Length: 318
View 1 (cartoon, rainbow, N blue to C red):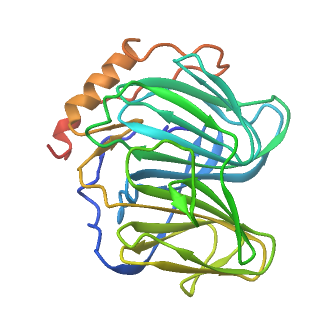
View 2: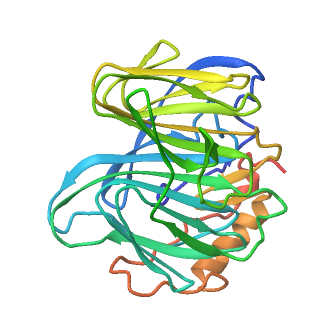
C-alpha cells in the first residue's frame, strides 16, 4: 500500500507536538482516505503526532469485502528513506518490487521492504475473485546512518506468539514477553498485535523509555480505563512500564512504540527525507524512469509522482 494523496506540502516531524516525556492519554481520530480502490483509515501522521518512535505512517485497511476484480490495485511507485511494514490479518496481497521479488502475503505474515536509497514496488490483489481484506501498513523512518543503505525485501511467515490473559499477542517488531520478532529494523521499537475471541484482560510490559500508541482494529477495548472503538488512536506518551488492556467481547488492536526519534524528517508522497531538495530529485528521477528500477508483472498502471515544483517554498523546514 502507498500514499496516493497528492500532497502539496510535506509532513514535517517538527510540526507536531513534541514527545511529552511522561505518560498521557491522548485520543486522536483517524482520517479516511482511499488506497488502490479501497477505503482506509490513516492514523499517522496526524496534526497532533507526526511519529511514534520511528513509526511515521500507519494505515488501517478494512476489514472490507470486495467484489471480483475490485481488490487492491496499487501500481508501481517509489520509496526512499523508510521501511514499509505490512501486517496481514485477512486476505492476500501480491508484492512485486524492482529487486525482482514476487511474494504473496497471507494472514499472520509480515512483508518488510527497506527502501534505503531507493526502491519501487507494486501491491495488487492476489486473485481476481471476490475476497476480503484486513491489513495494517506502517512505515518506519530510517535513521541518518541507514537511510542511504542498499534496498532489500524480507518476508516473515512465522512470528512469535504469546497467549496472555485471553489475548493472542503476536510480536510484529522488537521484543515483548521475552520473545523477539525476526523483522530487521534499525531503530529501537516495538509492534504488537493483540487479538481476543471473547472477554480478556492483560497487563502488557512496556519499555518506559519508549513512547507508545494503540489503535483498535475491530471490536471495542479498554486501555488504561479508556474505552476505544475502531480507528481512534490512543497516544500514551513515555514513562510507562505496564499497560492494562481489557475487552468484554472479541476485539483486535495494534500497539506501536519506540524510542523518540531524535532526527527531524520530511514525509512527502512516498518519500522520507531530510531536505526538500531530496524530494525534488527523487520525484524527477521517478518520473524520468531513473534510479529506482522497474517493477515487472503488476497489472496496475505505474503511478506518476505529483508535482513537486516549489516544494521548498511551501513551508518545508530546512
